[in-house]
Length: 337
Image (cartoon, rainbow, N blue to C red; front, top):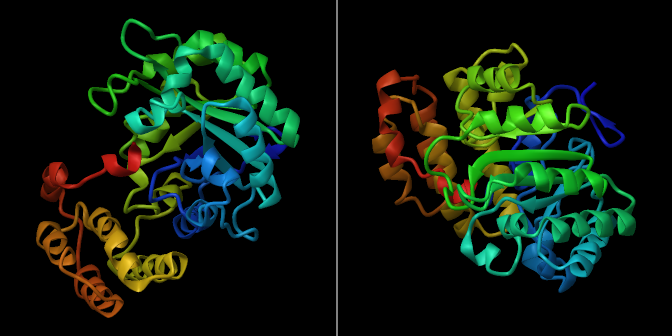
């Protein structure tokens, strides 16, 4: 059974929490296309406690679509994290997810993100305090360790499950690796072998539907968390359910719908156009003429220009295998880390 806490999920495929991506508009799209769960991007516990308006915006969700609603928070101080989780619950959160994997220095220097891997007891205390304060299921996302000499994922997992963690996602790279090298799926399999009765979520180097299926089959993980493969392609969740890739017309209308929802979410047309540029680059990846389109969108300033450019390009753009070789020109890491 695909269970996280009291929630039975319809399938094993989860959208990864990604910075600047896993906002309400994109989560709703992913849910509607078949994602089983879509946690928010990481939200600062300190920002929630200070009622920072920018931070509170990240809590917006669609209660009709986002069920269950999983809120990811980050921080290193147990009392602050518990108080932030309570605020999240007041705003509608049904699952609290703790980020213990972010490798970015501005997060780790404050004892949060993957820095928690160095202190398993403190990481477990976060789970205990948040669950006691909210009564909600608490999930965590970790890495395999701090560096190659400190791959302590089994110890960390044991502490977290002992504290009541409802499900554990693992990205099998170390903090030192960041997003370089290859994700070691053997780590996922090892974790599942040691904790066969606990929900394990695999993550890392899933680029296609075939990769997602292969991860689950080869590691035995209960769920697969999809990040990079969903950037510009939320239809991957439909494909994983046996559906078809989008037609050019459907892709065009999907990009436009996402853009309009993004403008409404941001509340500032110019800011929305600028922040949506990378989404357009992701949506164009693998399509004939993508490089020229990416250059064009960086000069767009108004919603009207975006709509015209999207219709002009996506309505007739077709998949081009040779365009995949341009991958190095597409920035994914800003979202992933």
